[in-house]
Image 1 (tube, helix red, strand yellow):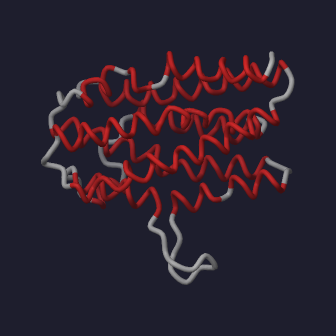
Image 2 (spheres, rainbow, N blue to C red; image 1 turned 135 degrees about the horizontal axis):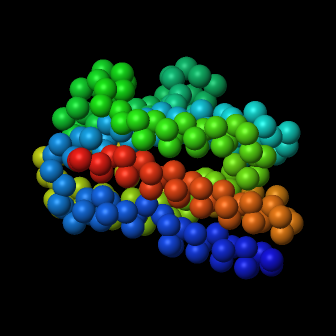
Image 3 (cartoon, helix red, strand yellow; image 1 turned 45 degrees about the vertical axis):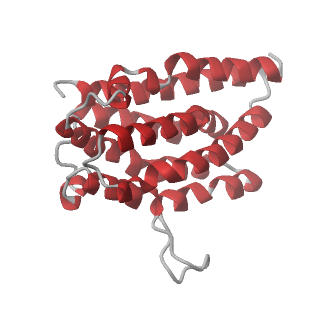
Length: 231
């Protein structure tokens, strides 16, 4: 397929299957969730957040292209953070820490979130499947699976608006993760899209990339299915 058709096929996957359409997220954005449901979501979603840098490290370990590794490697630090005094200079708490602060703002104890208390088996299974996918698939296909980020900025903006409007018991200081992803997801998605369009340059690779993105949408949807069960 042409690059235009390839891009259209990728976008169509997200438009029909991204998890913003899941009933749980629809209810969240409508202000219909109870505090305990928000806490269940925050605690379980943390398992996904803490595995993102592991997934990205797996992609790097499979990638022989130096130029690609140099583009992708910042993602690990973006989530794990950077200690003060490292080569980069100032410290950076990172996305995992920002999510922990969100969880605390929702009323969860940090040590309980870190210990995985209340983690639902379906969430663990879905996230572990995603990490396994990144470890075992060719790196361009694993990168393509991350293109759910194409749809994240607008969704994150609406989520932030919903939390400020409906879930006023959560302090504004807990929203650093949402705010940072509005801008960072645009950078990340542009990087991933450029790499996917460049390296998935045969019909076979293009179809595998589309299938990989569909798989990732299924992972995110399955996470919410597990969270929503009896929530």
